[in-house]
Structures are given as C-alpha cells and as structure tokens.
Length: 240
Image (cartoon, rainbow, N blue to C red; front, side, top):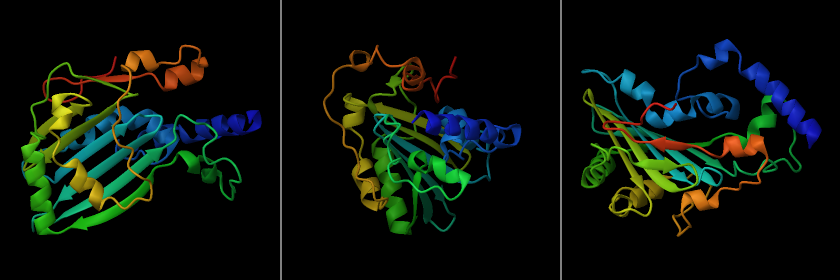
C-alpha cells in the first residue's frame, strides 16, 4: 500500500502541472484535477462567467450524498429547439482509499486513477422531457434566490442547482432534512433518466454532521474529508 500511495503522489505531481491546472472548471472527471477545481465546479463559476445574453443556457445540478459515499453531477444544456443534452457524472467510495485497487490492472499511467474517476453517462431529453424538468425545477424554486448563510457540510445530503437561462444567472441549494430539501420536486424524475450503473444513495437520518467527524483520523484524511460550503445571496460564498 505504501508503494501504491507513493506512485499515486508522484503521478499527482505530474498531473498538477500549470498546463493541467488551467483546464476548465468543469473538467473534474480525474481525481487530481478534481482536487483543484471541485468547489469551483459546484459553484458553477464557469457557467456564471459565460452567462450573458445570447449565450448558452446551461444548468448544473449536484447531489451530494455524503462526499465519502457518493456524489452525482448533472450538466444540462438547453437547446433552441426545446430539447436538452444531459451529461451525468457519478463519484463513489471516495472515503475508502482501497476502493477498486484489488485486482486492478494498470496498462497506462492514467489507469492508477480509475477507481476514483467519475463514472459518466449521457442522455438526450426530448422537448416534453425538457419541459417537464424545467417545470419541476420551477416548482422547487430551483432558480433562486437561495437562503443566505445556508451551510452545506461534506458529510451531509444536499442538492445545489446553478443555472444560466437566457442570460440570467440563478442558484439554489437544499440541505437534508430541511423543508427546502423536502420540497425538491425534480430528483425522482432526474434519477429515472440516470442510467449510470451506480445505485442512487438515498437520504437517511443521521446525527448532526459535527458529531460524525472522526477526530482520530490521520491528518491527511481529516483535511480531505472536512469541508463545508456556505451559500450566499446568489451563489456559493468564496472559500477562505
């Protein structure tokens, strides 16, 4: 295991070169790149920066089902003809460094990151499906404004919805088990279109997040799995 981690760190140093670090925020499929861009990805800074009249209408929904267990990301591109293209990405088992290592075959250097890479899928939504999704999002007040000061711990269940529609930016967040999360109308329909072969991790009753921190965890792991996002008036607040 020590040899494996040493190799992982060496490859990580290569992957973190300036050229790689300048790739778009949305490129979070690989773990090393994700470590630099994940919070910008959830905040959808790339969508916000490109949100101008006449630009592309783009939605990004993130379902955080405990960071260590599962995260699902949905990028939806609304088309002028009323249809939409949807890219799906799923992360799982990030809290277990041994996930996928057993019997793993490495034929290229990138294979070493395979267990922690995002599993992807795509779907084209027809006009009726797109209209239904937008309606469910509107019923969920998904285009904002969010509750200023809402806290989203890494080890809780929550949704974020970032949107640019016809040049108008919007953001919303829902934290389980609040009333806002209970009023989410779009999740079941979205999950029904998600064919990535990783079962959805449903919300479950848990102790408060701060009581589920492992204070005896090694420092490198404690730093990796202890983070919190804070919602502002129209998006995520910048991380300190």
